[in-house]
Length: 244
Image (spheres, helix red, strand yellow):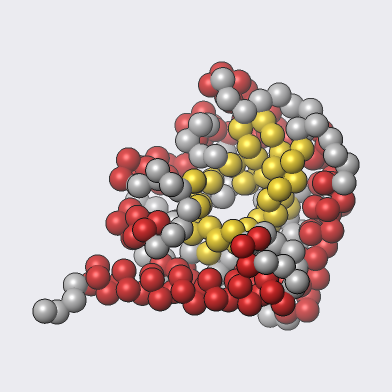
């Protein structure tokens, strides 16, 4: 009997996950860490729930979605009993109310103002929202996030805001063909992460360093990342439609 396109894609996802997990293990060991210290997130932008659920069946226990509306549309069909969800894309202030309480972590907090907005809605919902602060790793005008040299000061400021808890840092690295330069960027952010963690301040638990995507996750692990956000390398090239 001929395999369906869905079955073929299921097999691709399984094979891709096997390769990625092997790569993660190798990169972790080469940087002197246990493979289990690196968390694999499946990024689900434009991916249909049937394929996300198949990845969850293969052991994925963390997904990341870029857009609030896309996550809310998919959520009823997702089998998230043993899987957490993070928001990883740029969050507009007018969308905060819709996502509070729907994801365990908002990774893309890129301003004090956004942190205050999250605090307001988290307080209204009676919860404490975990967040990461986004770093503009390459100081690119087209990217959101704090500059590396200001993020410690901003972290300490944001930690004073009620109803939120700073859990770490995230970045989207600039496109860079030279591994040595890219590794240096990741290492600089890792050093800042360790520096902030050493402060031992209330409301700051520097547990998560979210760096690395499909094209650079191995280098990010070598640079200190403990959470990698992998989408197309798991699910295949993104298929955009009018809905996305």
